[in-house]
Image (cartoon, rainbow, N blue to C red; front, side):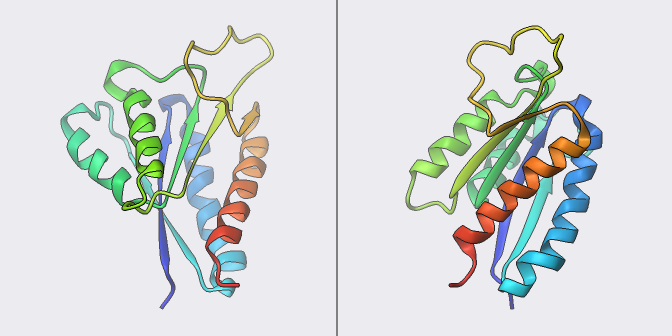
Length: 153
């Protein structure tokens, strides 16, 4: 039995293709990298949820139960119906609480050359991307780092 590390994946609406990349990457990374080292990463997604506010208590519970939190943004926190600012702050508090499993958070930011500046108060991203291929490369690097943290030595 593999230890399972849950990863809460929050993605902006306009990053649906990146969310699909996450699904594919988790599968291939688990198969080729994580499982041979005795680890399994299990992603949690907000699928086709236009307004997450009615489910916020359940979302918060899921964040508290996760080992990792990934946030993919496109320049701001998102509209009120799908805003991730409070979720990200909760993930940071969970990371600072030794009684909870949260080990790390990562933010990836889609930035095009002609984009306006990111919204004030966004966290420093672990990486910026323009293309889905760049996104996949950045996230694969994050998964590799998380694997090093969690895999048996």
